[in-house]
Length: 349
Image (tube, rainbow, N blue to C red; front, side, top):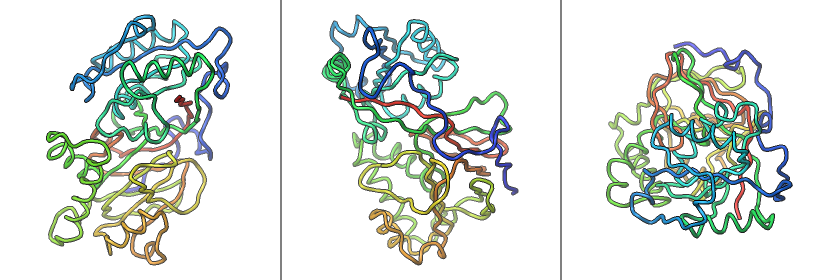
C-alpha cells in the first residue's frame, strides 16, 4: 500500500485552523438579526424517539417551514426550499446520523447563501453531537424552549469545525460531513452496538460504554481474536511521514469533547482535527485505556504504537469500512481524505 497525496480534493494545500466560517453573516453571538430568526425544522421520521412515539409536535410547529424527509434526495429538496425561504436557524430533530446527513446536504442546498445555524433536538440512539454542542430537548417541549430562547436573543452559540470526508477515486461520491470518524476497532464497536445492544433497548451513553468495553475485553483477553490483528492502513498527517502497517484503531474529530469523560487525544500540530492512531496488535491495552480516559497519555505509549496529535488533513489509505457519526461507509479505491475546511454555528437555549 502507498500513502495518499495530501493535497486537498480541490488541489488546495492544507491550512491550519477551522477553515472559513459558514455561519450566517447577520447572526451575532446569541442575538437575532433584524426582523427575528427565520427557523426551519427538519425531523427524521426514522429516528428512535419518533419510532417509539415519544415525539409530539404542537400547533406552533405548523407555523414553521418544516419537513420530514425520508431519503437524501427529499432532504436536499427540503433544505433548498428552506434556503429560498431565508431560513437562518435550522432545528434538526433526530440523532447523530440525521445531523450528518444535514451537514452533508447543506452546501449544495444553500449554495452561495449563508449557511443557517443549527439547533439540535436530540432524538437518536447516541446523541454524541448533542452532548458536545447542547440541545433544546425533543418534541414540542424542546421546540418551545428553542423558540422562546430565539425570540429573546438568549441562545448560547458555539462555532465548531465540521469534519469533511472525501473518498478519492470513488466516482460520484460527494463529500461526507460529520463530527466523529472511526475505523478498525471502532467499526467493530458500532457493529456490536447494533447487533446486541440497540435491539434490546440499550442506547445513549450506556450503549457506547458497553460496546467499547466489549471490544476492549475481546482484544485484551483473547490474543487469538482477529480483532487484535487490525487492518492494513497508511496514515499521514499534513504531509508528514506516513505510518504504514496494521492498525487496531483510528479516530478523528474536530470536537473538543466526547462522552463518558473519554478524551483519547494528545500531542501537537496545526489544524482542528484531533486524531488517534493505535498500531496492531495493541500493547498494554488496559493501561492505555485508563490513560486515555484520564486524558493523560503515559510516557511509554508513543513507543508502544499509540500516536496522537492535531492536523489540518489526514490522508488514510484503507480497504476496510469506516464509521462516520454512527453509520458504516466503504472507503474509496484510494482510501479517504479527512479535513475540516468549514466551521458551523450551533446554538442551544
